[in-house]
Length: 80
Image (tube, rainbow, N blue to C red; front, side, top):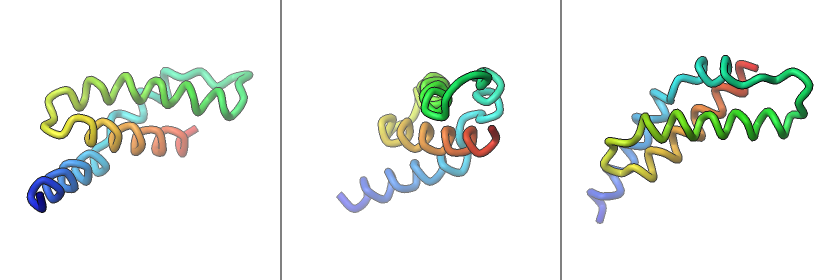
C-alpha cells in the first residue's frame, strides 16, 4: 500500500512539474466580452481536452489527469 501511495505521489509530482501546454490553452480561449467565470470554465474545458491526451498512457491515469488539469488551469489563468 505504501508503494502504491509513493508511486501515485511521484506520478502526480512529475505532472505538476510539467503540465500540459498552458500557452496553447491561452491562445485557444477567447476572453473578449466574457465574465471571469466564463473564462475559467473555458480554460478548464480546454485543459481537460489537452490533459486527456497528455495522460492517456499514464499508469495512474486519474491521478495524473487531475494533477495535469489543476496545474494547467492555474498556469493558463495566471497568463491571462
